[in-house]
Length: 300
Image (cartoon, rainbow, N blue to C red; front, side, top):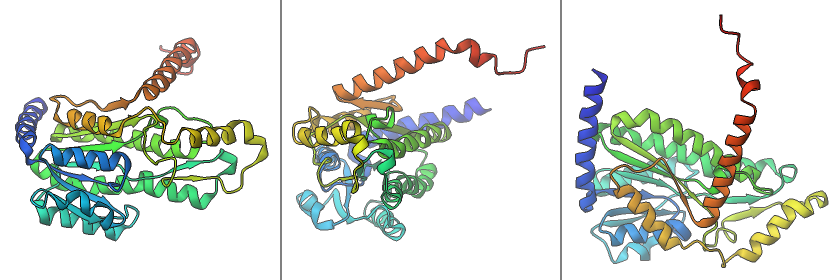
């Protein structure tokens, strides 16, 4: 019985996806004022999809949609403001009738050793990078469930798979988003809804500029670790290998694929970091297999 119901939903989902790929899908993208969000909104609009481009300041995205009044809207949205989230989702439905693709992209970074972390900033970081995306997921799911189709794309990071010195708190928010997304994918796949995590490495945006906060009271003991990392990131700004336009095209291609993956790493650095982490994790797991299995009650 489950199989028949599941197959029926899957067929409806696939049929709806074919319609969406013919310019019918409505994309709701957060954090479109610059960087990857901006590049993605530009790509989505160029592909002929309908797009809700959001940013804290509506004026930052107004020029992006001005030339496409029929299929694009600019909406002010501070993702950490519950009332603003509610208004933005309602405005999207009023404009186009649905939200078919939610892209949780807005957020910021924090470069600080764990001991250097300031609770106020850490809580703000989790509000923007985890709690706000989770709230938007909850806001759009009822409509997606009713239609039996939808795609939630959460922008994570290679730092959502592997932690780096000076990036512990940022990684913690992305690890949380990864865990939530993995569970969500299993819950909604039978309902015709897909979930994908995008895991970029360093891209040529201003993420290391206006979108990042650094420790206000550096501790000398971490100068060679977290401090050196902060210096390296400043030097890399504007020279990163990742191309936001190519990343945006890859995300749209993922949506358009027949079987979109749960995870997509973007960029050579992301590939290398994640490959090294997972390979090391597997080696460690296999090396401790006997100890791991011995922790259970003996089999009678």
